Image 1 (cartoon, one colour):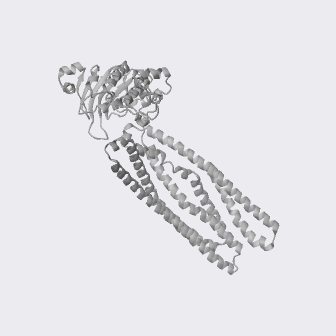
Image 2: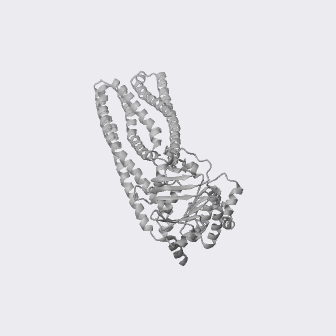
Image 3: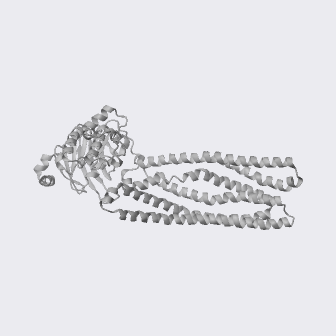
Length: 558
């Protein structure tokens, strides 16, 4: 398509050369001789040239603009696909709004890089060189007057674009930060209004927008310098010089009126693409800056980039084993140290302990959201570090304390892990999680729209939908992170019954602060300061009267 665009613009450029030459012939020969027939041919040639220019401009814009937009769409999909392939810890240090900006905004400049702008830059340069050769042939002395302003303009433009590229990168970064903060503000609107913090958020956003404005002002100033220098040097100095010297040549009889008119017309053909370059050049510089930021994302190592991950799991029993596992976030002190335990297939392992002890880190390691720094985690004897993540996570179900629901209907959210599930399977999951207990009261039932993040539902209702989603996924390994913490007493009794059914025959890891919910666990691991302080069943740990006993009796008193 680019090659086709280049051919079209060269054809258009060739057509622009015809009118000046035809005009020179018209003034110097046809009008002087009074040849009406020749006049018709001249006018016909000019009309033909204009039609060619108009047609090629239309086709050029239609073809390349559409192709550029298609490429933008393709790039957006590729960047989003890449971002989704990145490890979970990547998102811990990134704002979601900033990532949205990278997907939607940074690739926008491609339309100038590979669209009409790029072709106009190349085609315009070729046209300018070709016409300069014609001008040298017509009058070398006059042409020399054009070359110096063009060289000066080129020097100014190159220096300006060198300044612009890092500024465009900075602008993209600031734009992403401002977008990210705005996204957080809108998501946290209830917290903002609950604390009456509107002025505070307005100030933060105002500061961000003003920082962005200052960078944009700098880029606009640099662009304006290029544009004004083009206008002054090319449209001003060059044209005025040609008019003055050309007029002198006519008076001296060294040049005809037609030749001067043609020379000025050809000069316009040279100057037009150079004037365009001031605008196109800044657009292309901006496009490269956006692509620099896009490349940063595309070069980030994906989860599946590890060559060691070659094992595709078909079926698993669910025997999970931790062998001397340690983990640290970003080379800080170990969050967990030398963890060893077996979780046999179908068993329930409860993780308890104070906040920050490492419970969620252990669950994250089981889910392969995190990778051990030392030691090994195996599933049915297979090292998890060698397993293809997608094949393992198809056998995994996760229910979090504040589980995420997508905007849409209750039905769509439950069907999320298995869109192809039958109505019977859906209804079984709905009943297992007692979702029907509240959806039967809704006019639209399962087709009720729940709003962003399920904002129209209570915490207990959202949690039951999340559990129904996990039931439908039918996982072999299940992770429950405070799955009943958001429920009232009545809902908890419903959910506890459904969870007991869900956990049957599945290897389950339960993170629980409410210790009354884990009495029947096959083993309870008490995690303190990243280590297993105690292990055993509920009765065994109560008998020991250790840390678990302290936590349990403290909750019982409350």
